[in-house]
Amino acid sequence: MKYKIVSDSSSDLLSLSEVDFSSVPLKIMCDGVEYVDDKGLDLERMIAALKGTRSRTSTSCPNPNDWLNAFGDADYIFAITITSALSGSYNSLRQATEEYKRHHPDAKIFTIDSLSTGPEMLLIIEKIKSGILAGNSFEEICKTVDSYRANTHLLFSLQSLNNLANNGRVSHAAAKIAGILGIRIVGIADEEGKLKLLDKCRGEKRTVAAIFDEMKKHNYRGGKVRISHCFNPDTANALTTTIREEYADSDVQIRNCTGLCSYYAEYGGILVGFETQTN
Image (cartoon, rainbow, N blue to C red; front, side):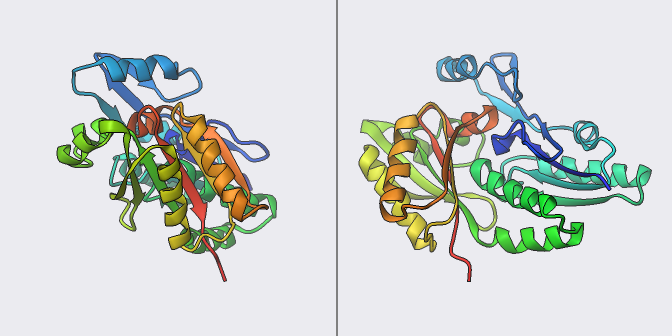
């Protein structure tokens, strides 16, 4: 039986070793140009265009046929999307799932609305991968992932909320605060997959301290941490140092945001996915 993991591109993961994997790209529109979130994306050009435009920008999710093409001919499929609170990607995935099963009645597909994005999605994908490599059954992996998701979270620090405000995800009043005199907004993806703003910080040190404090409030005790950043390696590295000062053996990895997460995080944004203590 053939296993496959499929994710939309908001996971910041375009390839994955050891298991069959496909990334389904979302798209970003700015000033009449469509930026496809795949390996060919010129991210610096896109960010520059977004910073320079005065026009409304937007994103579009994969259509069902995009998902069907990514499924290939797999027998067991694990498919994960950005939170349905930000995108129609999950609805598109569900339509593709119904169509695929009509033509492959014996196939099994586990669809996951991550209620998150970026590095928290990556943690879930890594958990699925470990189950596949361990030789676990489809049902065992599904059960493990359902349990695991209760112990993963996403925090973020943003210097700008303009794109989120323009797309109705946060208020314009909140967007005006971000970026003023170096203020950064710290927030979390809540249990419904909506963005909740928690704190306002000025400067890198206070921002890193606020993120780490929130991690510990959510019972972080040294588990995995995955950090994605939009052209802000300094803050990502500073947070990594802070985590390892208290949890020396913690598994922390840093990567660049790809297109969709860069669109919402904007220049200087940080996304932090982490595991909490499990008993």
